[in-house]
Amino acid sequence: MSDLDRKFIRVREKNQITLPTDLVSALAIHVGDFLEAARMADGSIQLRPTRLVAVGTPAAEREESLAKQDIRSGRFGTYESADELVDGLKKRRKKVASAAAEAAAGD
Image (cartoon, rainbow, N blue to C red; front, top):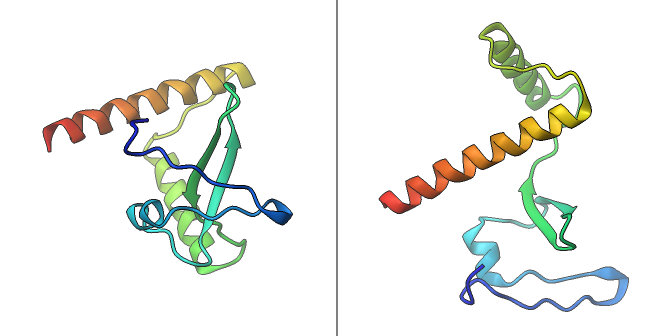
């Protein structure tokens, strides 16, 4: 993280925080949106925009349809253990991050 990206946030009563306006704008976060909070191995906290899909809704049916297309097309993997799954996810994240870095470098 560069110093330009560095922001300080105070935790208030009831564990509430306010995200800096420039971060909210850059990530296109809006009132009512959801963020996923993850505690990382190094003790840091990662916030990611996410969306929740309720079972039985058109959005859930659309996501299920996409998943079934992936299965039919062979775009899925199987794992022998949880450790193997985690290793696979880490490799996938590195691949995505690398592709994003290459795309950013090309801009």
